[in-house]
Length: 242
Image (cartoon, rainbow, N blue to C red; front, side, top):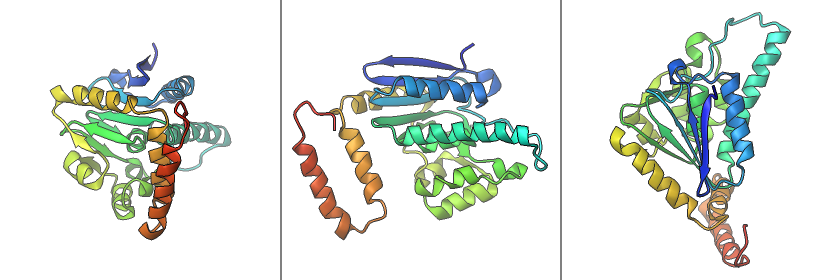
């Protein structure tokens, strides 16, 4: 059975985690399937990431040992973490927009996938968090990106406590963007996906590039550069994909 469901139409790639009986566990097969789908449909203007069942995903399998890792097992762990990193980077750097639809809990690596999407819509009773520290695994991979998505102080609290964060806090901290009742969540996600997919080719990418480029610059420096980017965009060829 395929661990994910994949569909592509109207420039929208929909990836649905499809092993609800296992909590949509992010085992190696699930990670491979996500990566393969993202690589196959690179032309998609929008990626919608969602899941079947009551939880988005319980995350990666817990490690069997906290010390004394042998070389063979260590190579397997590294390979899996590199896949997680690759998915995070692919979602964040997608030329179009990435949209996460959050139901239930998103834990660990799954929380990372959600956090690295451009837009996140969620049910009010969902939770998101990184439980690695609760079984004495330092969440160093998460630390490599989370302070760039939310404030470093909030990231520190989440990683040191391993808490599952409720949606009121997640909304105020910028981990999610909109909350919708269960019977309205999919409709809102579809409306957003359609809107984003309808933008001119390259417009979303141009916006994201500007956001990343200007993130740590003063307005005095970034403002004039932003003006230059707007004019650069307006001067593009009529059928361009810049």
